[in-house]
Image 1 (cartoon, rainbow, N blue to C red):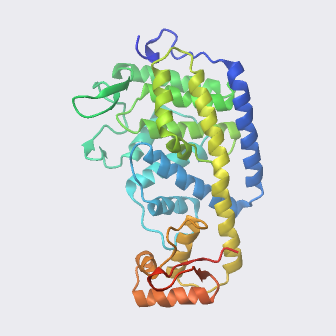
Image 2 (cartoon, rainbow, N blue to C red):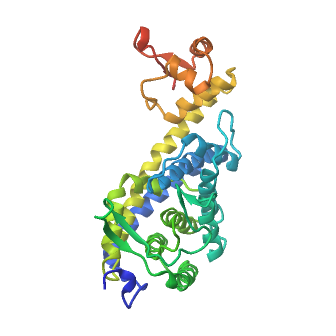
Image 3 (cartoon, helix red, strand yellow):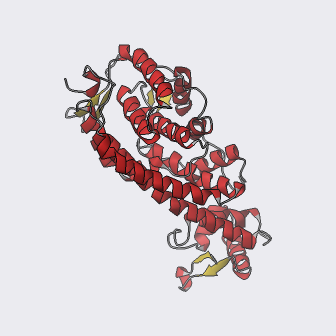
Amino acid sequence: MRYVWQRANWPNFRLQNDMLLHPVGRTRFCQGRLLSKIHGLGMNLSQEAQAEILTEETIKTAAIEGQSLSRNSVRSSIARRLGLPIVGLPSVERHVDGLVEMILDATARYNEPLTAKRLKGWQAALFPTGFSGLRRIRTGTWRGPVPMQVVSGPVGREKVHFEAPPADRIGEEITQFLSWWEASLDNTEGLLRAGIAHFRFITIHPFEDGNGRIARALTDMALAQDERLSTRFYSLSAQIMAERDQYYKILEQCQKGDDDITAWLLWFLGCLERAVKNSETLISKVLAKADFWQRHGQTPMNDRQRKVVNRLLDAGQGGFEGGLTTRKYVSIAKTSRATAYREISDLVGKRVLMQNEGKGRNVSYDLVWA
């Protein structure tokens, strides 16, 4: 037997609970500390924090699959769905909107039943044109009879990392998965349940494409059920992206192993703990933005100026590489060089911007952060 799904005990996994006890406790502690901080933000600011996390989650869950999304298009979709200001944001691309819709559906509607129809709807939303890149794929239905393999390497010398169960088993596998999903809600430790759900779904691999993104949405849904919160304040996908090589390595190791998935759950809990800790950086950015607009809420600015200022705020303090130059202002605001120079000078005069060190062609600006 080569894969875990071929074993007689599948999908009844064995866990070494003594090894998992302390990692669960550490992750719980980090969760509690973060959520305590969030409760002090207030409703409006809390929505801004949610938008930041959702933006990271959407961009990184796509990036794990090698798909690059426009940050502004993602922010536009999220802002529209959360009722946040959309001044200066572009129109939304259909495939971006579909991914955002799936992530929000999984978390905002975490307490609604998970069904095969809902899973198929998520997958169809990811591929609104019926294409994955240049390849036409099945959407809104299970994959076909062609073996589903995870491979790497050049054509003719591919390495097969994993092969999923055959197509004629998918209906039964998903039915069993959905029954387990419902039954496990009240009798399995919530963080372990999220990790098991991720591993089990990605191993079934029921769709022709989009399985990884859906597995991560299911994981977020399981965590939302555990926390009883419809908003996410940490991005597991962003952390998985940062540790992508190890993610694929531990998946392959356990998918080719026996029914003991303790190693996967130990990695999953560690990744989740690091995701919660790293979210504090994003929350700090939200707090900095809130402080800025509290000071400049009444400062007169036109739409172009607000667009540029928000771009600097999104980058964070010191995060806008090379500082803001007249040329960059022209590019962001879509205006003339003369107008850009005049509007930058206006913002400097209003103590919104400050000039960095440098002269001539090296002149650049940053926000007055405090």
